[in-house]
Length: 434
Image 1 (cartoon, rainbow, N blue to C red):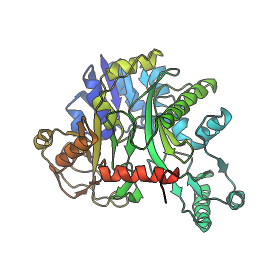
Image 2 (image 1 turned 90 degrees about the vertical axis):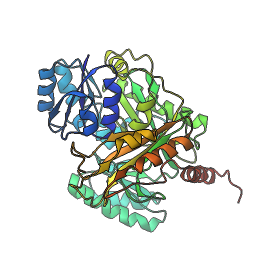
Image 3 (image 1 turned 135 degrees about the vertical axis):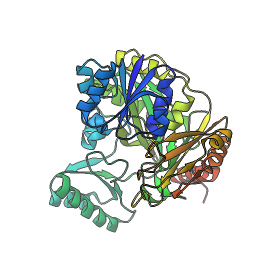
């Protein structure tokens, strides 16, 4: 079978590895990813959002199915175009991808169908109306652009009501720039990632993961695309009770049902970014594809063929997705200065043999075939083991064999960082004695 993969980040390197076990792999992406190049039969260079060029490659190679990695081409309707031209594709249509590409659509859908885990929100196009509503609301808020932000662009203001002045200024700037803005109630707690496969009806959960979005140790600094993530051998997370897991899964199932009723059926991978709040898991946002880095937590332990899963999604006949009972830790290496002012054009020294000797995996991302960094997260080192502690150790040892003008978070997946999250939840839910 010939399979086309669109995209060339760390997420796509993990997808490429999984697909290439059972299929001949063809790739279209804007740069040559050294990890994916080794797996691909042929490799076309084009922007992932240049739908016509992607289609041209798909037709030239005569692929049997396509798999879309990143979100930007979904927004451009790449699934619609490929399928209209005879290439079955894993990923939501342009209309269904609005769950990620249009935050107002997602919130309004949750409200219309009374999906659990929803938050109070308003969409504004009038600056004075927005300011008056924030004043009247009288509690801290979150300000979001409506469209794609690449994991950035969301402003969460402080706990003090005076901080809402900052929120108003940011919201004003977004209205002036984009015409509209989304304002939500602020929800405090601990975030987690819940990814599922779906054929539009059936929903199959993947192991939970937790991302480290802040740039620096101790969860401080600017928000990035994600500096690393971990998942546990029992596929849950240490701070999530089983009933909250079930509630989060119910939210995702209800969303798929709602999309079908709404006339925008959703097929592919759905990623729920949840905040475990003091009462229940709340949806922070949906993503219409695998997470990056979270794809690298789940795909290395996927026992079922990803090609088979893809066919089931396309045919509306999804059967199973089984995962090994293993823990995983992903640590991303980024260029110095990332995310605000990253250095570019600097080569890395990567000793892959030594990384493998440590038992770790390497997935390449924003780096070219000569191992020159392109300005975003360059590569990820992944530890897979029977316990979280062992997986973290493997990733930490592996990352030492990457040298250059880089930085990474040593605290991703450590016991100390996880204890911190457990304590936050206990405090929030009143389970600690004063």
